[in-house]
Image (cartoon, rainbow, N blue to C red; front, side, top):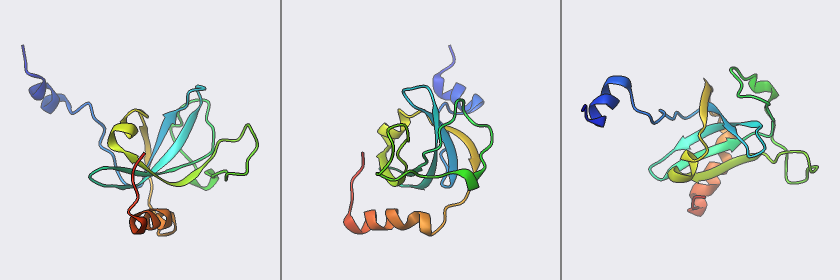
Length: 124
């Protein structure tokens, strides 16, 4: 029997290689898919931006100019968007996010992250 470590090194790890600026899809309980962007990765977790756009299936390519975030004042059928959400590594892994494409992270997108740093915030 071949040890799992050897198999992992031969065929790659089963854990994804998370990247800052990466756009990922994740499935909601209702079966639809949402897009998130990893803004930052640190020792304790991930800092993500959640977009409101619903998708019927995982997108293969994303037109970033069409991504939006619905604020707290929204209708019942709109999904809330979040500019910065600090998620622990354990919590994030339960989302089963799938890489779609690489993007960049702007200074504007990092504003919530910087406020979180100043406040010495925690993780969900």
